[in-house]
Image (cartoon, rainbow, N blue to C red):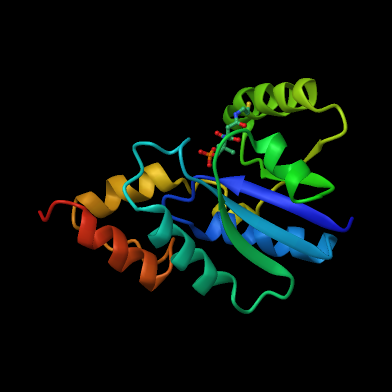
Length: 160
Ligand code: PNS
């Protein structure tokens, strides 16, 4: 595979995301981490903050770039001349939503394939939502996200 797009809200990027990016980078010549701007309307972090956190975290992985996108994912994939979409799949609970998105994307553009990668078992339970919930109680979340991300969400969450 030459070029893949790894889309998401990344509010914020966590170690499970990073694991998937590493796996995609080993399979593809280049990986574009595509940060959804409008799909994440209720995002805690701004697009700029989310992008900065990801850029910092992927700096050591060759072939990975980070951009924001708006509108339909399949249009972005075509615009980028990419070969496929990468999505992480953690558990059966993810499957229905991912299945629906992948099939809708295929309906919109039959030439755009979605490839699912499983993160390592140690990250399987991670989700940005749960991490924000834990952080909002004043607990340390640096086992799950970078120091930079922890600081960024700490600044945004109400202090307990
Ligand atoms: O990290 P998330 O929130 O699960 O990512 C979801 C995302 C951003 C990949 C998805 O909402 C998306 O592709 N949004 C762009 C709009 C779009 O193309 N919608 C139709 C896809 S079914």
